[in-house]
Image (cartoon, rainbow, N blue to C red; front, side, top):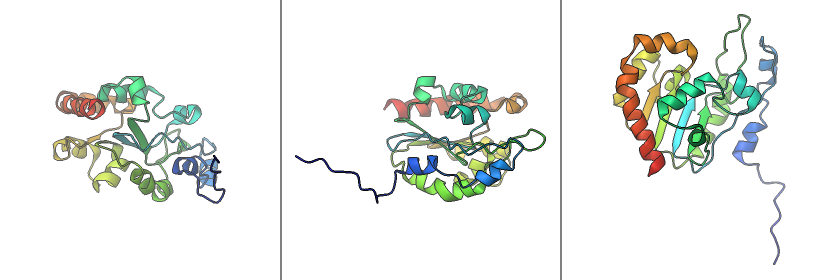
Length: 205
């Protein structure tokens, strides 16, 4: 019995090609953080829950694990997921608009995810996830891609019933949005319970 040898001419798997991407190297070198690309790739074809997010932060850039920061703690609370469940790539796919940390500007603020990343990789990444049953769309950049809207984040999130139970638009779970959460108590009161129920149904069925 012979074992088939890998075809050296065959294209590398999509996740490997994304991890090897350096298309934004010059762009990142010119930011205030002057960092190198490190795509954070966290999805597998069998996943059932898609988290369509913005871009990794500095901590995720360093660790190679998405939402490896206080915003991730808040997001897991919103979803009702343990760390173990959240990071199970066989169940949860995390596909950001930009796979790399975009960097800081001169004032130390986060830069937006470069459009070239989503234009290059996003369609292929989403096409590789045939089993998605629930999509959680986080932040304005992802809202525009998935919902085709340019409405303010508050307006989009307030209209969550128009998309549930298969899709839920959320604000970013950053600490910067703590004041937003206080101004909009309906988010935790009205949106989170059905979101958690939808997550549990998708992951437990």
